[in-house]
Image 1 (cartoon, one colour):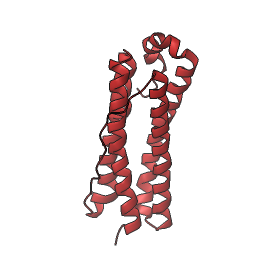
Image 2 (cartoon, rainbow, N blue to C red):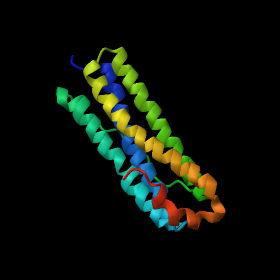
Image 3 (cartoon, rainbow, N blue to C red):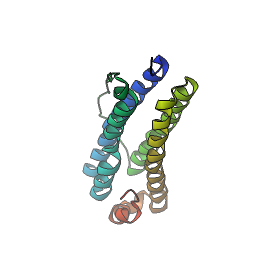
Image 4 (tube, rainbow, N blue to C red):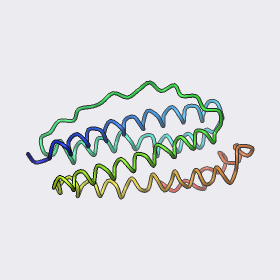
Length: 167
């Protein structure tokens, strides 16, 4: 077997979580845009972070499974109807799941390494290095939100482009 069963299972879970994070981020930005009128922040996050996750999942599938003639099994994602009491709650939720995904990705790297799937491990390290930019951006958004505070959320949204570093 070119890729161990343990690594395959971990990769499938990573792909499922990437699609879940897309769905979760889409819900967060929908509320950010409609309930809190933060259209600039919502637009940047939607294009740069929410859309990142399904592309990431596809890349994992292509590089780490399909390349070795292993088809991807797509897990289910739950309904997205979370409620948020403030912009701060949305930002905290985003930061939490963005960092949790990084932790999951590092764990999958370790599983691949521990199972001598060095071929997969090498590709995962490249993907991890790229994903670290998403984490950096989310930490900056969270830090900026704390500086502005809920009482200045319109200024936060107005200035959002100034602290968007993903390009």
